[in-house]
Length: 180
Image (cartoon, rainbow, N blue to C red; front, top):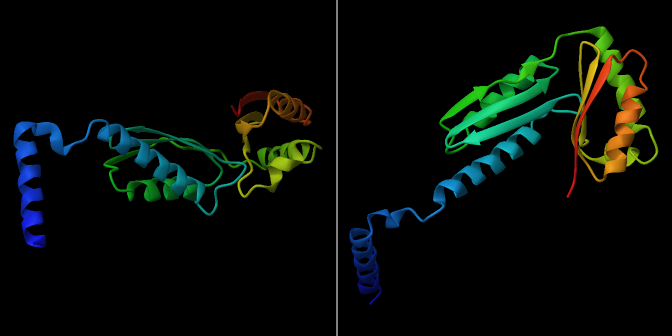
């Protein structure tokens, strides 16, 4: 009896596939595949062991091609990001455009000073409690860029004020996004 049910199901699926050739691919499966790849890329990037508050990783998924973007302080983080993403099922090509920030003792001092100014401020200190704090501080030749997500506009503005108050910072670009 079970055998006849299997045969009937097989015949029904074959008949439907003959009537509608596109039946084997549900509508929107391409979008679902891209969404799955995007979720897995995000997960793999966040799980990188040396990814921290002074690095910014972003990505774009276009079909089976993943473009990696952002800035990192270590060249090994760039190569690690490319390696983990290329092993994701469905990824055919990885375009690794991550910028490795130049080595600079002055930039290192500015990173620490900006970190203390932002995460040491009452109200913003709650963001430091997360495994990877959501406010990323990118310093490139004395220019600070803030990337990430904050809870409200007041936190975004306060992070900007705090970063601008760090001695030695030439300019601050505030790319923080406010949660909806």
